[in-house]
Image (cartoon, rainbow, N blue to C red; front, side):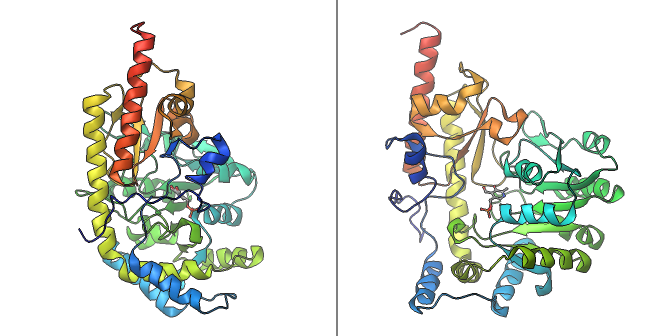
Length: 397
Ligand SMILES: Cc1ncc(COP(=O)(O)O)c(C=O)c1O
């Protein structure tokens, strides 16, 4: 391997939410963070080089996006996902959550209904509620070895007020990489009921062997005409602090509406974000390939560890993302306080499943985007905490 993903870098003192935010929030220095979904890895060298080069010119004014940036995105989408996109379909936003809010604001009215599929990244339903729209939950169904969509439930919940579906593709937190037939069936329902489809594909570059990311809008031109895709290099290349993402809208009418919103609310391009994006998509592929091998190693390591050492916690192999969705219902722990339990007893911070919606109760999300020594330490802390708590609950102290 050319890159040392095992290297543990000190991030405290770099204003990062994941580590410094722990101290602000919990006032403790000994906690290990497996919550916020960024990674504890240095970026690919060409990205840092491009940023340094740009920073050396000491004027950081308003930024326009050069044609070469559009070319880099188009080539990436073509190479990685077989998706053909035109430059004029792309608009920049300062984050995918930013884009989701602007999309809801642009295409729906207060009181309209918007479908989401929990357990799902909480800003999906918060963006709906914060904009005064109504959330309609179409819960995913847990099967023996996976999660699937309940399309009958979805269709039964659509009425005259329902305008939009927000899809997470691949899905945070359950790790599904939705297959072509699944997406096809979902899209058919949305088309039949004239729902706008919003596909958040921010995790689309984290796909493990045996799976393939299918951009929803690549399924057919009819689906593309009713779809807005949100993407970013921020998860893939660990650039979240550079606040740069983009949307792809092939429908000219929809695009015009979105551009009006961007202008009205004054969204500017992030100079260093755009610089990093271009370098990442042009020169970051080798780094990503190695990262994917490393993350798969983390995933497998964690799964074996839990199976062997912590049988009360069940992990289903994620098909994509650097997130593990762990079923803790087998533990002797009060389910309402899983996050507190792990903070107090294991000194690790994970996301409580309930943050992802009501059917996340009893689960936690654990971010495996970190050097394996950190992952190992986190897992050992978990194991100790679980063993101690079961000794207490069985009176074997
Ligand atoms: C599905 C999903 N969408 C959006 C985001 C956040 O994107 P951004 O930082 O670009 O707002 C995340 C971050 O974890 C995510 O998992």
